[in-house]
Amino acid sequence: MKEFVDKIDVLLDAGCPFALYFYPGSQKPELVFQENRTLETVNSIHQLDGKKAFVMAPFHVSEDEPIICIEPDEVLHGYKSIMQFKVPVDVKLDNQWEEISALSGGQSEEKEEYTQKIESLVQDIQQGKFAKVVFARSIEETFNPNCQLGNLLLELKKKADQAFVYMVNLPGRAVWVGATPEIILEKQGDWLKTVALAGTIDAQNNQSEWSDKEIKEQQFVVDFVRDQLRKNGVERYKASERETVIAGNVAHLKTNFVFSEVDLKNDLVALLEDLHPTPAVCGLPKEDARDYILDREVHNRAYYSGFIGPWYVSDDACRLFVNLRCMKLTRGNAQIFVGGGITAGSDAAREWRETELKATNLQLVLKKYGSENII
Image (cartoon, rainbow, N blue to C red; front, side):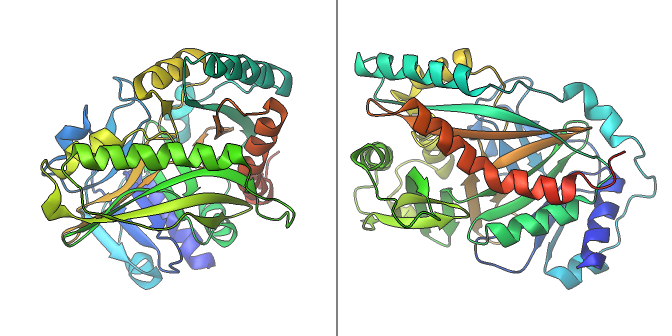
């Protein structure tokens, strides 16, 4: 894999936007590469209609965080084709990290501060202000920008094979790396799929069982997805039984929804607008929970808990994932994002532990490869 890791260095040195990723369970890397350095952006999900791009949407669209569209000038499949690809940029971008260092940073919260906020939020929920709010925190880690990022990507793939594992280079902004287990919308031909995924337990603890809190938390998402499908004219759909899925070192509850595009009364972007952000990353009521998050979280979520993936880059298909278990890399800094669904039955100490579990794989990868050659 050394040759592949070296190739990723070449892609990064070119200073062009690209997305390099593995689909869940696949051992074949995919590359979407844009041949110029200018990031194309749009300001609403509706503006994705008719586009072909690898898209990266934020939790909340703003002037600073628009929806990014990486143009599919080159779409390559597999190690061999990617390693043979001749990067069509002659001038190496020497100071990419310098360009984006001013945009780096965030704020980490200590346990006491975070748990106090959760206790206050639980009281608000118990008083009927919300049904659920997904509250997140960020963790700041030291990162060596001279390490080989390809090693981070491949190690993360080993740890979370059933996730969508990716690296996205956004020149002038950051490099994002993540491994998300959650689909928001998938299209293959005339068939569409979305999922309701929520609830978290330690996958490595055989004594862990699903509590009423986690089951209720996931049911909020199930009910929300059903409501959005009906709103968009979809009355016929196949919903799977609730199942446990493993995502690295944690497990979640998941329900799949499969339906036909012909039943949509509106276009696909209208459904996507209604689904994002789901209660799995935001809360209920949706607008109230979103406002609470934007006001109370000390960090800027940016593209964490947005959605990410190929949007019609080849054929009549798209696969978009909720951007979870991810980190934003800037010069000398890795900002890891993790959160949890808070309901009336939440325990603040347990919620803190859940965020620690969710951060573990990213922290282990950084410890193994992200500190290479730090002086």
